[in-house]
Image (cartoon, rainbow, N blue to C red; front, side, top):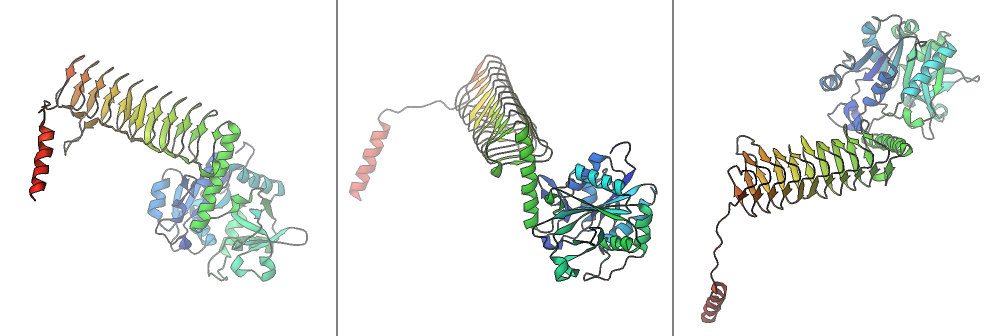
Length: 470
């Protein structure tokens, strides 16, 4: 908020039961766009420096408080008797800041933008209103509350869809669930609030009607992006909000210079950073705090969660990577699984059907196919042959494997940890290695091959003879 903007505090309404979700999970913790619903309005307020923020919680209060501890103060609404009642239960903490205007925001507005909130504040100041509400115009207002205006287009009230007359339901301007109040008129109106409606609840819209009846100015700011007013009450609406958030995010990325091959199948979360010059192929999912550098190519059919992808890196088809780092020019996949605390060095390669767990692969090292490397460090330019596994778990404790620079591990080798292979060592294919291997040494740990000439032919003849006598 600018230095000229009067101080504003906020009440974020996050107590709803979410009955239509038919879920035990708190409504505001259901996710859209890679984050809980509540993140949308909360981040919009935080971006503007609105403070303090009071979160009114009820359904699943413990879970909501645990998820958002440190980002606001909490007031519990028990029982939940409507939006007006929610502000009433927060009244005591709100009055600790008597000079602050009160911004009331529904917690189920995941598409809300900071600039929209700022615009509402500016309209409120310009019109010197006692209250200002955010509205939107929808082609199909459905169950949203309708904004009522008089002949001069002044706001004269809000009517919930269930309480509206047929004529009122034909209106297309809806209440978005975002209000800015002067504190004095707000608290006075709350004292007069009643529950005379179809739901028997205390609606905040009743405060608007009270202010109008008292002759106080009530203003409205209409958002150009009607999606911002879309609340989330069902999984159908949640999916629509998710798609809208993703489309918004992908549009921003493409306009910044990111190549998104197929936006319809791609998902990029709120906290993901993708640099201009990166390329996202079809069915790519970027989640958490993933970062993709310029020149990197990700996909198709890839999921990254909290992954740092370096410049010019390549994450190929059907890979899952979580909480790891892929350095410059490295290649991963297809069909690779990189688990947390792994690091793939510059120009290193992790190939098909390879799994890394808490493993560092040095620059230029290769594990091209069919290997498991767990709790391991692999030196620069080492080569891990197909079918190699590190036996890192003894049934009780995890043990490390250290593979030096330039080591060659032959195919189908088993490295029983704890173990260390010195720089330049060579492990013969098919070996089970249980002891450390010195630098530049050859290690063989397999049974001696025995060849018996003619044995196979004699066996066939014997079996044929037995069949003849059968």
